[in-house]
Length: 271
Length: 271
Image (cartoon, rainbow over all chains, first blue to last red; front, top):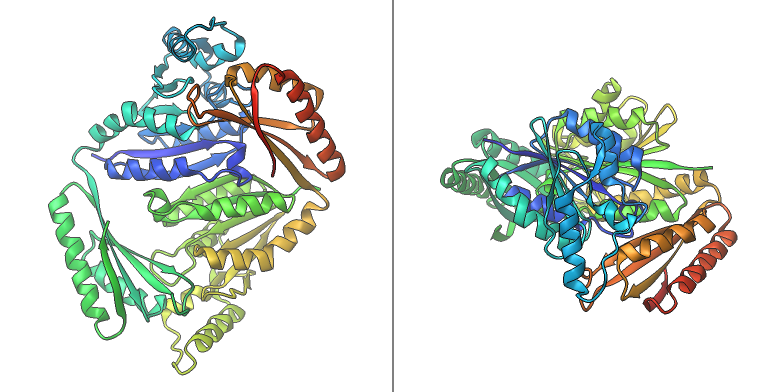
């Protein structure tokens, strides 16, 4: 089985470069390591129309998962759920279970404080009809899950600790199950003293012989400079991990033979 | 004048979380500081069909700039320019000026080495008809610029030092010119001892009074925890920088009055 995913990251701070999108990097790594395949990351601002239209475009591609980050909080510009509900043409309704979670959270943090259900707090519990809240163990705004056709939509808060906690607890197990026994093997080799354009035909030959191995080269440190090198990633993704490790290893060995005497293999590491 | 931009970041390494998309963060910050407005970042893999279709979708939105990163090198999976040419239905042709730049670069780095124009090197000079190369001062693959309707398409290499050098030299001046005198003012205030849901109505009041100021809150460190605080960004983007600084300052002063006695203002910093 395969398991495809798209991310929709919402937040003006990402578009002005104030905040690096570490959530996307973290989710990408986690999804890959669970055997899933992340196909695309779309990053937009806190804009209702953008959220609505991006959601529609993504759902039309029918990924197994659409995971959103950001825009679940109590302030005026947290509009991810509203944009989503407009894209789906489902009305928003206070979700009782979500409201119970929010109330419990406030009581837990400030035991003595009276909980007033302001419109700003109620907002965090307003979900499209049919959605389920995902308990947030480290913050206030619950996550949300909603199945639409073959796609499971999952909305996560933008605060990294909260996003990670909810993903690990509620989403990772489903991706793992859906991806079946699939996985990802990757090893990197770093070479010096060769141009990427000289490496290109060698990569072609290795990939022709080992079609299951994907070889990607990354020039580092500025081509032709003293500290420059090229990092080559040899990767396999599929369902036979033992075979994966073997073909990756064989492909690296062939590349080493091609490079023999033509470049310095600076280091070799497993990832 | 306004100046809108979209980024299309190409690279499998971004989708498996091997590499953080620092290019997107850097470009976002630069575009904002030049007075431009980045509306969206789309990140996809080294996939011809994805590049072609994403390019079409972005061009249909008619941004002033479409900036791509990655996929300009000599290897089989560097297919950004090819995908772009398919989206535009323009054929690829060896660009003489680009080829001269590539040849000069190889001669400069390895003065004694004979320059063979392999297909892997020629690939880096194959541009859609009508495109112009952008000299890469720190690497081999030239950037590319091509006007299509009102959109200027700019293709940059994925190696950060090369992307930054080409952007700063060739693209930044055009964005600055197009954005006119527009700019961006932002100041941050950090508060403790208050829930974001209590802050939300205060933000609403401040923004109603100062509609030109955008106030965004970011919970940090886990809500309700000992080290937790909420960072509030007060920003203005427009053409009257003096007025921008004034309204941001006034909006912060009003917020301080609202918060007086209700929260601890932990720090106050300018950005």
